[in-house]
Length: 97
Image (tube, rainbow, N blue to C red; front, top):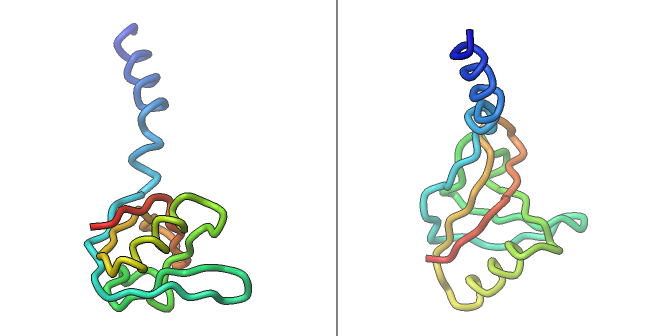
């Protein structure tokens, strides 16, 4: 009985991470920042196929946007964290390569 309760608690605590579906995309070398009606996007042919219009939304008032601007100014490749369930991909983390 105690083992069953422990298993249920563990699955409730850690189960959400498996459902979230966030992942790092492959390194993107040819990309640009696009502004569309006050929303910023990273646009690239290498964007995951489930992301509509080959782009991923980036929050303009966050650290990821500043990192993207810096990486673009330096001509660096990037990779970012996005979800795998939605067609409107939202960047939740970004790293230059």
